[in-house]
Image (tube, rainbow, N blue to C red; front, side, top):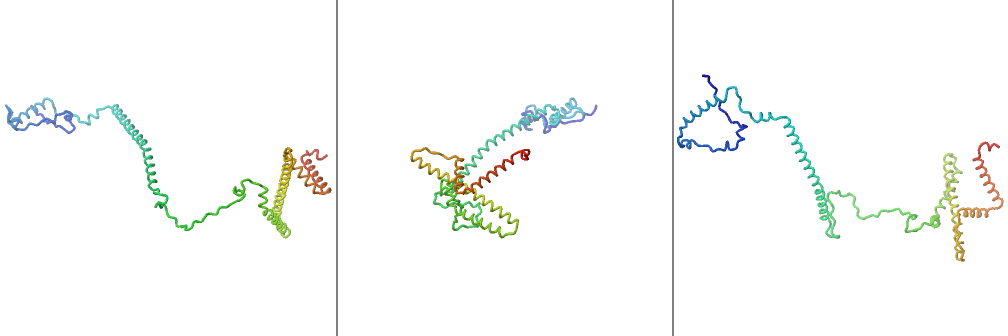
Length: 303
């Protein structure tokens, strides 16, 4: 008779016996209870019977070439790749849902945090406010103290131009303005005299050109101002005469620019002699002829 190898089946930690509830929770019977049972045998006899039964079971069901029951790793290895992919996709979806939920909670909490910070700032401002207007003011210790100390407050000097000061005159009047600043014209006259004297003494050509240019600009400004004064004078005289006529019941006549120009020319010629008038007219005609000749084509100029 061939000797068979005796194998005692062992229950591992990962065996399938854990899946059956009540397998390990069954009450264990003591040796006394087994001995007290009717028809019971002694412990030695029971062990011999158990060994014989195990030998028979091993001969009938187990051989030397068979392997033990598969564990949990072998069970996982039998799962298909499709099932694993589905499980992984479901896990990623669950993670995305959890992240979205967290982001939504953070967005909901953000405005509440801002409102809380604003409320805290308001409470701090109210606490920092003085109890009354006569109470001393509390200065923050976080700001650096200036090293300069003003014992007596000095008022800043502000430039004041009376030309643009509404307190002096709310309405601009050129005649009054010229009257108030007439000293500037006197100063300009003295400066022109000084320039003329330097031109006679100086021998530097460049310096003489600069002074001559400045003198001509000042003379042109003076002449233009004189012309403006004449226009204003004619208008004032006309308005004065019209007021008297209105009092007499006549209608108002407003001067045109051409009428003002005619009156100025008449007034200027009235102060000149006959010979001077002829010279002025001759010069004017000469300038006019030169202007027309300049605008004339070359073919007609040669004729």
